[in-house]
Image (cartoon, rainbow, N blue to C red; front, side):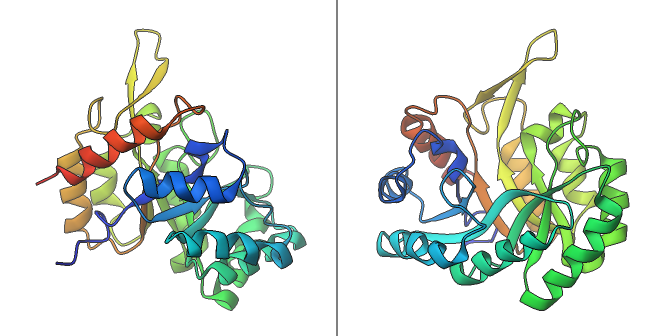
Length: 247
């Protein structure tokens, strides 16, 4: 029985940032019960596509598919072409991205050209209210500038930190959502956030997944839990169970 793209999830490799060896990383990814990853710069040097194939093969041999790269900060620099070359080597169709306030006007057109050349889409990661690209207004502007090759990666926890509501974003950005980071926060009275098992904090996980499915989402999805980097397997295993328990 096939599952929707919203439920066909993997894990962000940043969760395992204390694990530097890719063979060990791939083993841990399988251990938590998933078979795909968005690989980040902790585990690969995307400026060296000539070496990236070896990393891809390590994961392939372990039964792990690389579905996305990132999160990468795009500034319109020539070296960013190599990131697309790495994505192509992996067979990944997406790169998660940040843009910066001082370079986005030139970076977005340059990035669009690379997207069109390589057949790869960019998913802007909404990294909280303290970072450019975290607010709904800014995202609207960037998506308008980028056109169909540039969409959104909804990180559910950072969306909430920025004052957004993931379910409302799922409705508003339907059709332009290319990636999902399933992550959950609780907040103290000072507004400080804490990672928790997805679906056990402020995120209404079943309602969010239902709305994403209603919007026809067909991008990539990963869970992300940033606490306990020295031993993230137990918490990530619980995250997987929470996701699989959604009716």
